Length: 141
Image 1 (cartoon, one colour):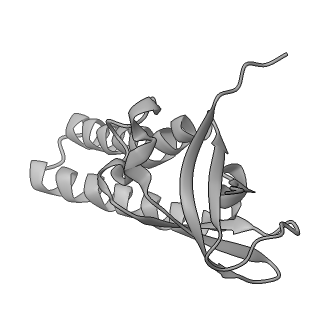
Image 2: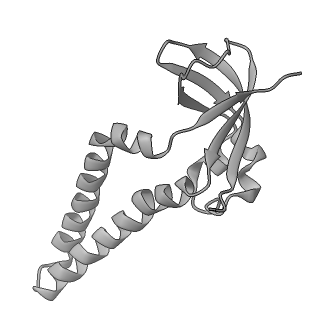
Image 3: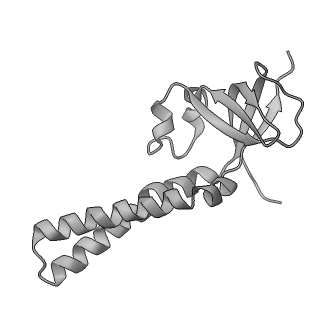
């Protein structure tokens, strides 16, 4: 049996389509328990829009819901968003410096490599979205 924790945010359904449910959440409420809170940009934001797959939940615009992410997704996000690009930047910089490339060109190439990495990350964003799927639960008042 695996021990999984969940990250839960309260939110309000903004829009429901046959494929998706858009929820506005207040992210500061649950960030205190998150292991990645020091590195996450969402921790500083007041509200965020989350798109959740519509699996036939009985919700409509204006309903209050819980948005749930099973723990583990936040560390993958930190890995892909921060650790990998930093490692790439350092590898390019060290390799070019070791081959006596001028510092300016080494820096420009390193930054260009990271920009290219983020471009690839943007191109595969739909694949990554499946990795970080959210679920919702209607809050009965």
